[in-house]
Length: 187
Image (tube, rainbow, N blue to C red; front, side, top):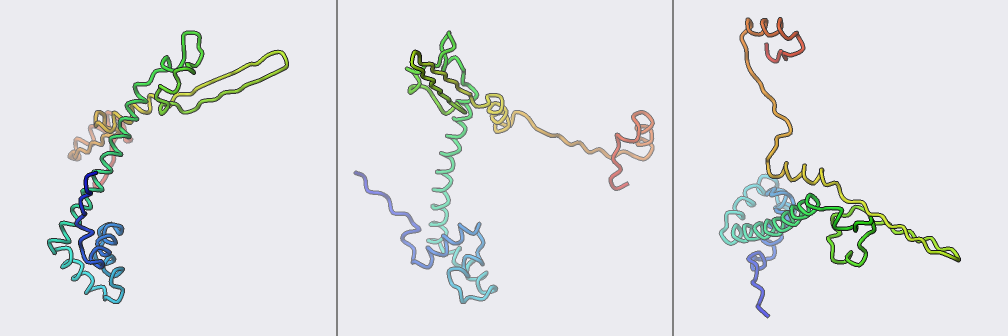
C-alpha cells in the first residue's frame, strides 16, 4: 500500500496550523484568525502579526496546498453534479417502462434511479386476487436542461441596456413611444 504524502500544514508548529485553519474557516480574515489563535493579542498587533505569518514561506505554501486540496475536492463534486444534470436531461421514460406501460422491475437495479423523483408501489390483496400498482415520476428534464444552459453560458437571463440621449432626442422618442419608455435617471 502506497504511503500517504504528508501535508505541509501538518508539518507546521501547532499554533501556525491552528492559525491557518482559523484563517480558512473565517473566510481568510487574518486579524480574527490571529486573535482566535492568540487571544491576548490587540487588534492592531493581530493585523501585523497575521500578515507576517502569512508571508512566511512554509505557512504560505501550506495554505496554498490546503486550498488547492479543497478546490480539487470541490471540482470533483461539481463534476458529479454536472454529470447528474446531464443524466436528468438525457433521461427517457422508455428506459423505465415497457411497451405495455409496465415498469421494468427486472431491470430496475441496472437503471440510473438518480433521475427519478418518486417511485410508488401499492399492493391490494383480497382473498381471490392480488393487484399491484406501480408508478414512477421523473425529475424535471426541462429544468435540468435550463440549468445546463445557464452553467454553459449559452443564454443570458437578463440584458440591461443604458443609452444617454440629448434632451431633443428624448423629446422625439417620448413623442413617438410615450413617457413610459424612458427612465429619467440623472437628468
